[in-house]
Image (cartoon, rainbow over all chains, first blue to last red; front, side):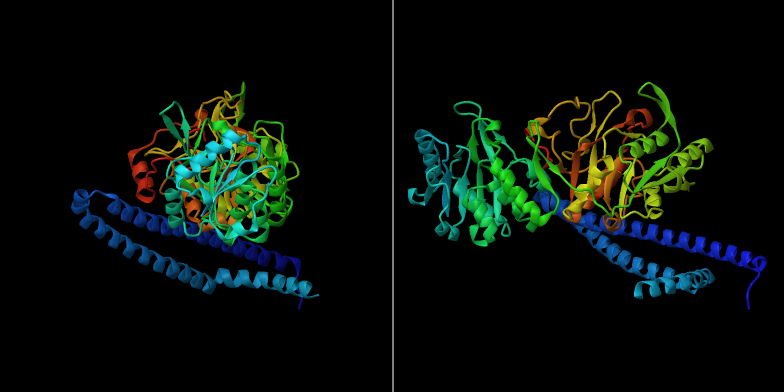
Length: 124
Length: 470
């Protein structure tokens, strides 16, 4: 059964909207990934900087500060591990939720014929 | 261990002085080998020894052999180690000439290794041994520099004594030929060519053919009077890039505040056409976030983060900034920027002490700089975010700009994150432009910005890429 132009255009508009939402969501995820990478690197560096400061201090100063600094180091290590875990979990959850969404299904349906076409071209 | 004295071109009295210094440095007379014009090559039998090579008619500092042994111990992966020199300022007085940290791009043009160099011949390839056999230590360092960031190492102690800075600036045409042979295999299309400046040469790099360069420009659409004309900064920034690199494959991603005048956006559309991507930014000012938002809207395999108040003035600006990124050791490149009055705004950052600074800021731009630093592409500790180019995957890997530093020091943090990847920051002397910073920015730095920066990054006592005489 073929569609008339009048029937096609609402469908196309809906597909375009779905693609826009899809693209915006991918960008949000990529932005979130940037932030998490920055935090990871920052926490690692903060940890190393603290270790160096404790190691570099003179004995008296180190004795005064060591306990507090090592507590902070431990806390940072904990934060770092949590951050690593959370970033994995959050990204995975967001991806799964998105794949389950109507937007993804519509977007996937829109892009699938194009993928198949590309596949047949490259194979040929 | 053997001491090799490069005696080519030296008189007998000069050779005697060099020989005596080697003995005072700790070498037994039987461990000293003199290479002369009559016998200009090292013998293959020397390959089994560690070699301390003395060049340029200089002398070794007393007890240097002990320092060399300590350096070998501290740098087990190093195959070539170079060190500082003492410069005699009087009969008993001297100052330390500190050499720059290993800088692979700078080394293509400039031999900054100094007169005393240690080499391990037993771990050299055949082609590298051939370079050492003819005492081309400069080309050997360039070759070894491709094998890892810890293979050529600077030791921050004085091993040699020189009479003046210029003594170790010898230029050797055969070395240039050898370096080009190394480049042929490592970076096809790259070459070092003679240039009529005091640097004597420059690096020629091919255009990267498949580069789509996304130029991310955060803006508010503001304007001002610069160079005698009232202008909208972002419009002129885009116009200047298009005029400089008409053949480059470009995408402009302009991240604009909601308050940006509509006619500015219309003008941008008219200028850049299909290559323009406009992204509205509705949140309070955060330079870092605007850059990151621009990045995620870009498609290029290379990105150039550009302030809207930069005006490109050199030809092939984009090509010059992108080409060094073909060398996978390079993380990011930056430009030679001047203020409206023509004085230096940016020739690389300088990290020494608590407050990161711009090197040579407000000095005249029309000069060679100490040791020709303004005439050659070279490594720096950091680069201004006003104009930095990098591969897309590098931006991603470091997590872009730190959004916890919305205004100041985000570029310092950015640069230091790149360094953690083992990648270098290269200032490109031929990529030139204005940066009208003083017209648009009030440079107040808050204490919390210092604290946030130094929570991550320790304060450095001195900058390894900016030294006495650089």
